Image (cartoon, rainbow over all chains, first blue to last red; front, side, top):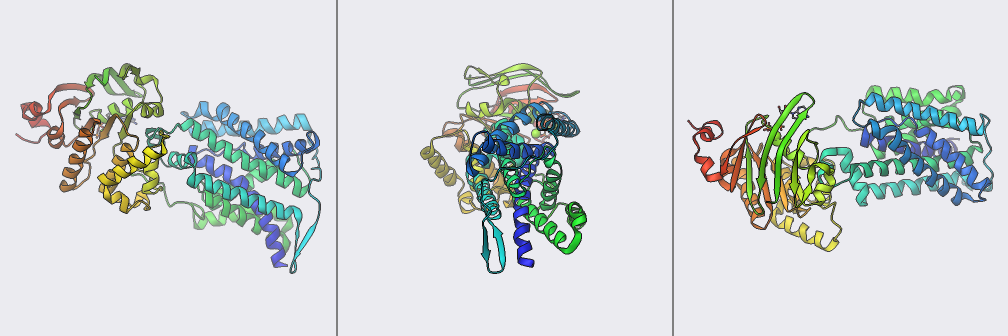
Length: 290
Length: 236
Ligand SMILES: Nc1ncnc2c1ncn2[C@@H]1O[C@H](COP(=O)(O)OP(=O)(O)OP(=O)(O)O)[C@@H](O)[C@H]1O
Ligand SMILES: [Mg+2]
């Protein structure tokens, strides 16, 4: 059923969007593909599990705890792996990002082992019916939480002082410094925002699929990265659109019998879109220079 | 002396841009820094603002050594720059650009006052406050860049070629505004290739040639100096 697949696709897509936002914001400000972003998402999911099992928290405690841990982790990651290389070539930072990603994966493998861990049930499996569509409680929660977080992000970037500084810095570093903006703080803030969203995504996915594993960030990160590029890397609305688009397309593809090729759908779509619009759906034509 | 530059050496890798320049600015003055393309004028301003760190030399301002401070601290200390080529934030509105100018300030009520006075000085900006800065004309962008610098309520304003690419009528208007800004108590360091206009509104001037100061003195005297007339005023 078409409508049903749309709901399933939106659920998956809104999580892709949450992760994609981190890629796009970081790229917007330091032109770096933060390859360790998928690992932040994975650690967010694990933190979510531990918030429940160790600290006895419910849904909110789990998600807030994961966000806090990942904010700290994301900010530390930037300080240690990227900031010292800011004045070197882009390739150096990219290699450092890949290194950080491998490091975090293996650290978690060492600590938690390769087996997936179940996510303890904090949300009952109620099902709601809207006409002919079935929507589970966890789907509803994913949709609502993602929508709230994205609205909040939009508000911060549009109206809050530090959010505006983020936009200014992503347009012109030097001039932003001339306004009295502390570029380092703005970059830290960007990593904090992106990591918080990824953490929320990790917890939501962990609850949805009832499974969390040290390598879960690899494919999810790659797809979210595709979503960010598809939407136009550097563009916040682009990442939201790209994520949703990918999630819906993937779900539709599976429903149409392509489940063997599930993971290939994202990459195929990416190639097709880039062929026709090399800057992505909402990407700017070419960086303007005054 | 409000700003004192001492033996400043700046290089970009192997390229030497400033080879030991010294000059100073007194409170309330308009000082012009003139020179040909590539003389090192923008480099001087960028170094004062902290965007470039010098290889050697110092910059003193109100008892502080600016070369040790990051750019945002220098803005906080009271030095604003209107950079070469305006450099407005193209994807932000006029209003947002102006807000960025006041980034280091926390006094909401007084920021509103500053905004009012910027709009009074540049009524066109108020008419276009919701427009994206990238869609403004060159002249309007220059006004915005100046208004944005004024929003910081600076003690010293560094202007890098404000007349670049503007029609003669507008150049005159911009220079009048600079003079007026100075009269309301802002000290000004003006970088220009348009030496004629710059000297006409300045108190003093320095002539920069390939990284060295080769002449200095009162602006009206320099305007009559044989060397300056030949090299920078296009007279023979
Ligand atoms: N980012 C840079 N990298 C390398 N060299 C640079 C850089 N910026 C400036 N230079 C060099 O330093 C010298 C001084 O440049 P600067 O921009 O200060 O000149 P200017 O006097 O402002 O010239 P103009 O009037 O053309 O703006 C020039 O030789 C220039 O090529
Ligand atoms: Mg210049």
